[in-house]
Length: 196
Figure (cartoon, helix red, strand yellow):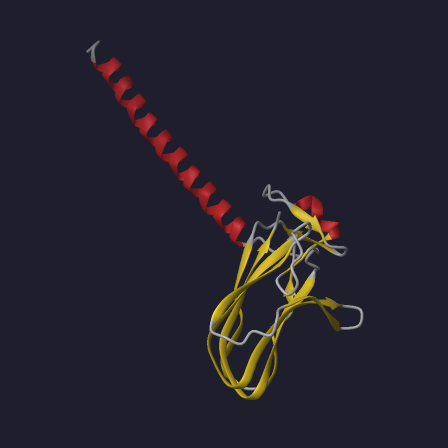
């Protein structure tokens, strides 16, 4: 009978150890699920009076009214898609620059026809007090199937109609003017906002 007590104690210790490991594993999984939901719920525009409640460890930048999440380089996808577009002006929606210093935009013309057809693309700054748009950089009048890169970034070498040494403002957009007689243009314009 003297050997039964140590065996019972050892068995109880092993069962306790298994239960403790299972409990720790469940707690770790719960913490990961909570962290995942906290990350998924991150949003911009944290009010200034709530800034101290950011406990997720993410960086935020003050935009003059609220706090926005810090971002790395951001690809916008196609801001403009022209499909057999006739003469006129096509504008993207306003874009919000959270913390980018500049951007690169690729104008990709895949088809263009008509009499002297052209596509002229501009990266425009929006003055939010008046709603007026001002070009930061305007391409040359593009008239052939080709890809053209436009760059706005502080300190970059300035090349007319290709690059501008400037910062990207908070609110901006892309504008394309299709010109010529009975023009038809198929093209996309996509950009990448460069954080640093």
